[in-house]
Image (tube, rainbow over all chains, first blue to last red; front, side, top):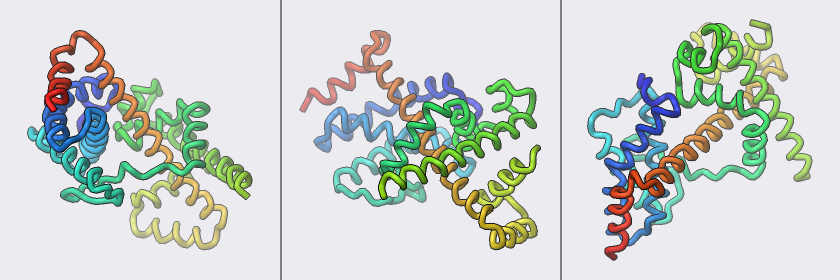
Length: 176
Length: 90
């Protein structure tokens, strides 16, 4: 859908605009509720992640009322934080699951993939997370066409799959 | 595409529920017979989770960079002042 938000530069522009339009209201709300600047910041940043994930998935079109939507998520996150409720809750069908802690072995793995397999991870991010259409991704990553981009996608997926398998088994050995 | 990549594609179709009912049935039968394939399926599922976790972390870094820009650069001073005032009133 929204090609505008699928490159880093476009996202930066979007986040700046959303910060300017909505963060003052979120800060006002959190302050009124007795929260700090850092609490407002954490909540708003999580709300932006949720907003982004919804905006790129096809099941929801966020229209002109994005400010109300973001403010709603932020208030919901604040109330949940305030109540100390770390369970997954839902807001109008939106799963709010950002608090799930990574397992220690998972964060080690993630760190490894970030450093050793950055290029593949970026490619996979653009396919599966940012949901950039194949033709655009091919262009973005400098492939000759959709076909070679597809081949590279599966090669990367295999590489990540095998790395996770190897590493997970190694970490298990450490624990035993 | 080489055979292993085709298999990876089939695992993906199964996990993301993209295959038609006939293909899905054939794949499920294969899974029952082929331990290696089940193993790959298991780890591929982890791979998607890992990609999601990675992507979220990267996105959070992008958002934090925007935050730093807005609260450190003089070009956005009136905005950052406005926010600081909200918290200084209390």
